[in-house]
Length: 422
Image (cartoon, rainbow, N blue to C red; front, side):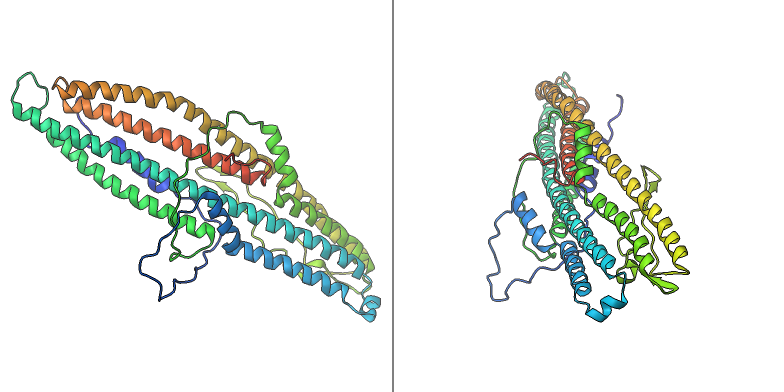
């Protein structure tokens, strides 16, 4: 290596602090109550643990309030059908079937709430881990800056000594100073990265920007040594709210065939007349930088027109579509779980490999530093060794963070069948 890059190897480190430390939030933010105007200007804030943050998220996240309201509405709709008077029961021959469909609707709303709860837990856990990761990366940068300053001071002394045997020159001092300035800039980015991660955690918890959040220092989850992919997939299929919803929607459309057989008019209202089956967005596929297949949704108009046989035939066709929707959801959940498993496998392998690499890089850096202290190596050689050490530490931190995110993802995709170890 003939030249010295001006602190180029640390650029990925700062990018990690700003990009990897943040995750997309899963719901809209809700402002927390403002502090009492009469309260003291300085308020002691107790750092919140992960479990406390999750509890706050379960109590404050607006997405959960929305899901609970939908469940309450489903119960109200069911009660409304049961409260129809005698005359209405005589006229509406399809009422018993509508009551069955309303009962299924309650199950769908319950599954949606459970799904929202696991999404909230995942969002809080992920952003909490992001705060810890950003802190770790900032620590690496601070350590690098401290060592670099010490090396720069030593280089000044060596250069002033004027010993021709010393390999440290004025250029070495300038380069070390330049890298120190660049490192301070990266440290500022890392500091802002922590603040962004905390802001994302507030949103995941459902509290506003004025909420006095102090995040406790906690280690990321330890390495999980082994997982069984097939067991994880089976657990996801058994527990995921999306599959409960898809299977229940298929049953709804099956019942619609029987309901249309009870209606005597030439236009029969369907279960969709009493609810918006398109209110829940269908995830779209992605096929740019990564491939992620999209889901499909059921279809049901509010009214089916025509003679009874034709209305029943159309309801049957739409029931067949609902069966395809259920099968597609089954496949997507299986794929999502397998991808989450593979992310864990990749991250855990990287952590194991990088653990030894960190120790090796530290030994090399220490050896070069000892020789630099006596003027036997140049500033360029020292900078290369130190950069390699800090970059390896940063990569190890990143791998450990990705392992934690993979575990959180597995907990989400299996709806809690797999739990992140304490």
